[in-house]
Image (tube, rainbow, N blue to C red; front, top):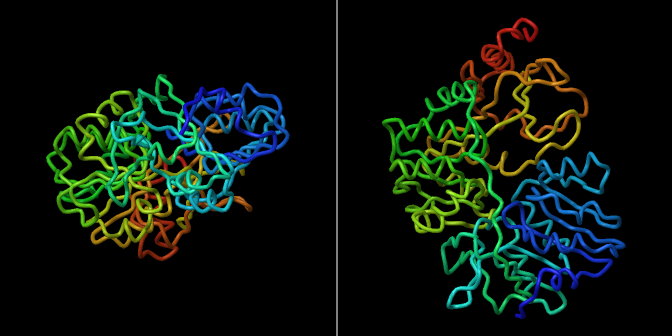
Length: 425
């Protein structure tokens, strides 16, 4: 290992090269910004997902980003005409893609080394851990670790899942002290609160919870924190402020999950600075970060007791098909762990999969129904109809599993916005 500045790390990239970085909070921002100061790339291919900053690198000629999950930055780059391409893959398959690409250079964020030389991978275990280690072992490849003193030091479950890299594995250590990208706590509207109330009716004492980010999951966590129930477990792709508050309220015990009892399990975290400080302190022992190929494995999900999966969608048709990552034929987000948790929850003893969405949306200056008769030809379906269990809007919950196609249509019309029910019928 040798120490380097961000500029020195950026200089190891060749004009024609391959680079991979983790999703979201695992990205090394100082190194990526330093790469954006170069103008000599002929063909640089970068594999990543959910960019956390407007990195100038991806607006440069000769640079192509292959993204498995679009966020606001990817959408803005695409709309500006830059070479941003969507790679359809669920989060688990990012590991396979990275392995096949075998990028010559890999770069990740981590904490500074501890007294024993270990750099915690902090907010992201995700899909790159194995490939980071392969890269570090290969003398023909370069592993860059950007060690940020402001990242929380989090833990895995050693020895099998250490959630850390040792300095002996690292080629270049870039030491920085910069603010970590944080998200404001999501606002829950009156519609979100109504959806949350219907969703909470499916949550029983002792169940295991998986939630995502947004107003609805935040409202569900808040209502559960204030409610009379508890003894919950957590097994989730993303750890959020809402889950932190649920644990602070004493509602999470993790004592009878069936999978990794005693710990809240996640593969990455993203939220407020308060969340990061909590993970570095009070939450360090109780929340453990494991690779996504384990956390999002439907078989591992199903091992949890009464897993209640809470996810969102953009639209659903009357057969029960879901679109969760595309708007008007263009990538909007990504597949993530959507279908993995829908599948795993179905086979968890007492588990249920909840898909929560408002009944309407605004598009082109008008209000449209998110529940539609049928999707337009060519629409990419995220989750097929036979996987879907419960759909929740502000008007109630439609339990679709086991219903005929005609019964599904009737149940979905009943939770559509009243202005659109006759049209749907």
